[in-house]
Length: 399
Image 1 (tube, rainbow, N blue to C red):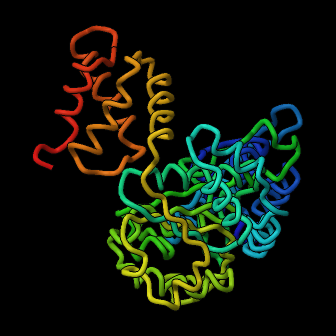
Image 2 (cartoon, rainbow, N blue to C red):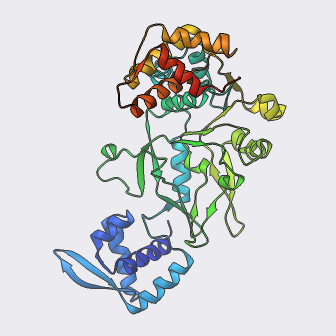
Image 3 (cartoon, one colour):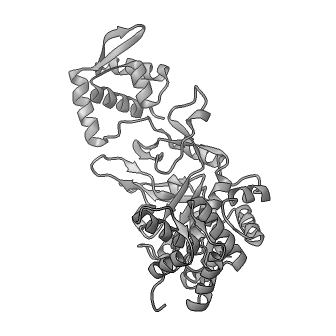
């Protein structure tokens, strides 16, 4: 990390804080007390700040008029004032070290991650094989069969260990934010006491994007007001899992997305462009899971189909599995039900709707019963009459 970048960040921090101690400066920037003290010493030598007093042995720092002018100028170039960034070289090395590639995924890990779901052994075997393939995975099948839920469960297999995520990365004086508390689940209790505070220990990230995905979200997000970058979704998902849900229904065309990622999926590197036109090479160390209810052959050409070596069809569930899903859902929701209810629902779906069973039906029907009970201010109970009312509300008439 270049000292000028840290000096600039320190000066902006002092300017916006008014007055603070070196200890406070260390806490805000994530730098060690020794580094923060050295930076203050350099700024004092340039007459940008001054010591205004002592709290014990800790100097209290305030900005000078010269420093104020310099800080205003710096803020016009970049308003980033937060935890100090790490060098781009450090980021690349750490991401490679924490590659999503593991020493092998085993059956017990897969069974543990999917324990809350009702999934047959053959499908679990396919998931385990896919996770060991170290290549993209395509889940396909009709709506409502649990593709997204299963993609989330797959990510839990990889989330059993931890990775270090930086707050931000610096390259050529430009700052790119990476840590996102909405995505990265921090584990502060496992962080060593004297660790580098510019890094956060997290579970492996899981990023879910759906129909809102645009081509712009795959590139650096430059804020013209704050004058720094936010990393794209694949950068935030590094060392974890990126789930492209409802693939084929994004605002970016499927072929555009696939062409954009041919090189990253093959070579594990991605090329991003900064505002000035400079191209940087970042690691693409993540597992990409595509989930779609569309025919894969209609979405991908043969060249890309070859690159996604694992395709798993998630289809209708058999009657016995459907009954177990219904039992679990009702139990979790605290809804008692007559023993005949699951079979009555199965009969309605097969005979009246002329459809295959989908794993979403138990949850959706139980929800209807709970909502009705809440409206009527009573305990939910699923008997034949409640099932008929739920069916009437849930299924499209005339289907």
